Length: 563
Image (tube, rainbow, N blue to C red):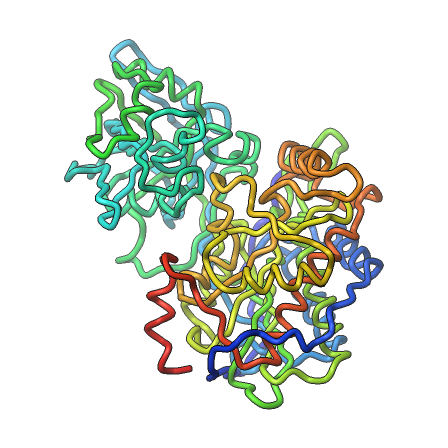
């Protein structure tokens, strides 16, 4: 069963709000009482948002209509003010929604005959071009290694190769990924910690910049950080922000090729994939054609513009209302899909990210019960995070609040539900001073900070806070799958068991549903922690800063005079 057809809905929301402004750097004083999250309220909110009533909360569907109404009603009931466009609760995010039909043709042709390219088995592709068909006619395949162009690291995988009309084939992650295996690595990409060059979004963007007509990333679970089941979970559909025709991607199709299929295709082109993985970790690597191998596809595409919406609410500041601390989580999930073993069709994202939205409600409730903050506090519920951080990206490039005057973005996206923990996991260690605030507040909870255990998964680049980091706003992300928490009952082993079960079975699947087995006291700890940090920032004059060496420091420094 497929998702309900998206439709355009004009919503009568409106009036622009301006927030934010100035201050001096000084230690953040812990003068504000900590949050006290109510787990019963969290449970009620998650049960509601993950129920069938909201039909999996896919952008552009009836499920979105219901979700928006629910979110606005909750923020109103909490006593917040609208902070969207023209003084309303929402910001419209114009999206292009595409869905592939049954391929008329899709295969690899080699000197020894055709190899299958069955959707969701051998490859998983989609398009973000608003064309009636995605067509690629006998395009040569070129292996481009990790596909990195990084002058600051003296690295260029393309070496001037002309990719126009060709399909670029990439490895996932970046040239240092195999560092822990003791194999030869580039040594300039942070070791096991993924850089942005390792993200699939970067690789598709780079393939388009190089003029390719198609892009395929070789899937492997360790490098991607998730299995093939997660790759194929979108059902051949895709979303993008509506863009000017002159700025459309050159990629007719983009996506993934299964590892075993890739090995066969490489062999047909006279290449050993395992050896090519080693060669790609050298700065001297040059693109290698797969001799005699081409890719042909003719796939019908349905497409339409869908107006989706971010929800924005605020508590105005009493002394510096033009400065704002922002909390964020995403409301969207994956809508309807094929029935699972229990017959469930809605992939409702109870943890990812109904639990994050529930956390926003609790933080807002606590802050409204306290004396009004000196700075404004904004609560954002983003659309289309699961489609590439599109709602937050649109906001960050069309802000109702200047990025220069946004104090920090604090994001919740997946929290562990295995129980109270002795620690909190930090994503993106060494980026900014908010991690110092995290350590200080965690200590008051009797907890310590543990750096993420899986930095190779690039989680710092995979949540809505990243849209703000790219604009120079200091960010802090809480994400329960970033590393095994030290659970009070069961230790790190219990934390890892939870991650393995969630990411292996339920991540982006129908089983990401409310369960009576959830132990919310760990999530409560994290919500209290990030809520306390935000509340303290909202009552201080300090501006968090990026640390030396962060790629985002220079962006923020340019706007320092405005603060």
